[in-house]
Length: 327
Ligand code: TYM
Image 1: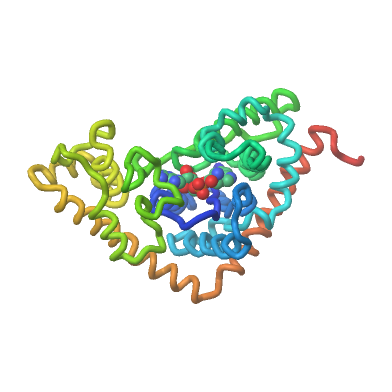
Image 2: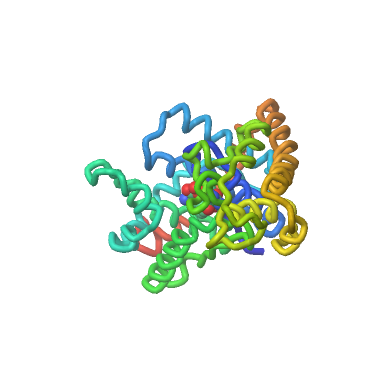
């Protein structure tokens, strides 16, 4: 069985996009191979963040992992910063990725667009190097992510090809896996933009009360067409709500179109809100239980122990391949 790896950056509040595009899939794959799910806390430092916010967000993600149904006996859940090999490997791998390709990364371009060059941190630019290190450390072939991370995984593949061409079969070739439906959940206030962690009107946060979630869905931007139809180009708002409904209920777009044929957007939005709230109500309750149980730190330290075992072996292999060894 192939190893599986993914991570979430503890920058802002987790969104329904993170839940549908990533967390739900993590739960599915945990039975299919050894799974490494980490909290990318080193990555969170690439943009300014308060220390207490970083610390609290990191534990929160671990709690959400557990609440979603990740079983710490099957999945290794850990903090990236608890495994020093991530940083050590990144220092080596940065020599095999180039400025040109790093500057073409969409995420870098988006995040740095409004910044003055003097204020763009090197870490933000080199973000995909650390991410490539994360990916290759656990010999994982499968990388379940949302669509926005595919470009980074592709770059990690280029790096593996380059590295192995030079040094032999040292690194395992990873591959991004995206959900058939829900790999790119859009903002409710501007459905041409991705739901991110930084747009309170357009985002549904996992922390939001169910009533707030309902209100956000009821006021989601739609269109003047007046028909529930999957047509992302002409009806991006409606199509996004259909995607949310489909990924949480398992209904196909065809079924949803038939169910709401002749009905208005009000009825449709109420039904979407019901599906989202039915999914999130028990999830939020389990999250509260996990927080009360005080289990998070124990899970993180157990996960880090196993992660360190595997990561150190890979790091040694890479060090040896490039000539960094004493005997
Ligand atoms: P992050 O924290 O931005 O997002 C975590 C996961 O959620 C997915 N996602 C979405 N999926 C669908 N619709 C959306 N609107 C949406 N927003 C986010 C992301 O695609 C991602 O899968 N760089 C990564 C963290 C990371 C990582 C890694 C991931 C660091 N190292 C190695 C995989 C492998 C990030 O910032 O994800």
